Image (tube, rainbow over all chains, first blue to last red):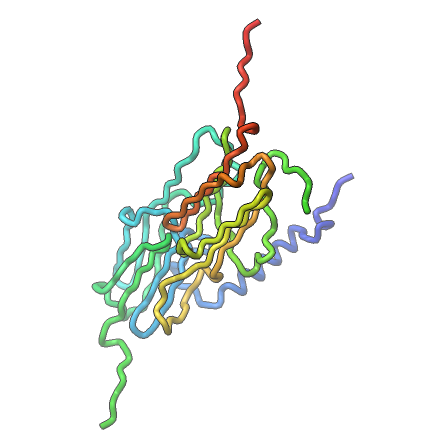
Length: 144
Length: 129
């Protein structure tokens, strides 16, 4: 006797269909050509307002001094390493945490000012705020 | 009430009731002679928003993500689309949950759950006849 996978209502095909649904629903924004596929480490969120662009990188347990953050033209790249200490002689049940070299590249709008960037590492999130150039900010025009 | 004994793994996972609303933190779990250690990645959670519940037979780790975000920000791209983490495990009886120690730094939670003295692995020496 063997038990078919289908008996559990979660056949391989159901699972694939679910993944497909998730993929298509998550890509609501057009992807920049340099964007990495989902699941790449670290995960990032990007926010934008007329004054600045905020990039959040979810990378806990990293020494911020070891990170390489650079802006070239309108490309922000973050690279570094996260090395985990493996416990010798212990039995591992799960090893899900990321271990290795990391790199993400974010395509910024053309009007960012590469001289006005602030980076802060807090609670395992690297927050990079990049100001837009003064000239490109919307201005309120007073009618006299 | 689940009375079935967990065999090889002493911390077995329960499907989260709120799985749709929360993220599953990535975890490393290992066991040595004196206890079980759980490391969980929960970036974006400040210490005061961390929520660990442990009793004799279950462990729930959760936390709320708070990002320092200026008002009027439009989300342009988001890999992280939920604002909290949650994950639960059932524990077996030889774990002395009252002696659990926790530390949380830079978004990494470390939990150490010791085994009761009587259950700690002892090396057995075979004497020569």
